[in-house]
Image: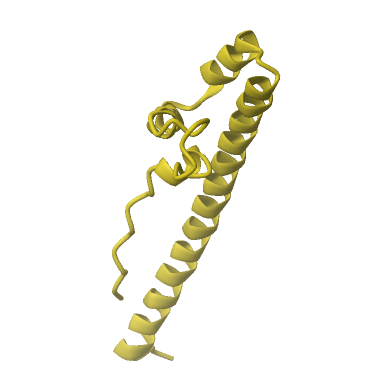
Length: 105
């Protein structure tokens, strides 16, 4: 029994779609882990800030990922303690990963 060219193309597309779905699920898990880590270290910093504990703030900042540190510094530059128009947190300035192009079969 031989497969038609259309069947082979469909099977190839199905395999590619399955691979892309697995890659997408992995990327989502990594993104959620990263977001949770950023939120955790940011919350630690904020609690230390409210307690006026600069030593703990410094420890939290050392744990920031380099990409989050950039966003955090941009947020601090808005003077959130005195500026009611400042964003609610550094996550607003965090970089958004580039979109992947749509695959074609």
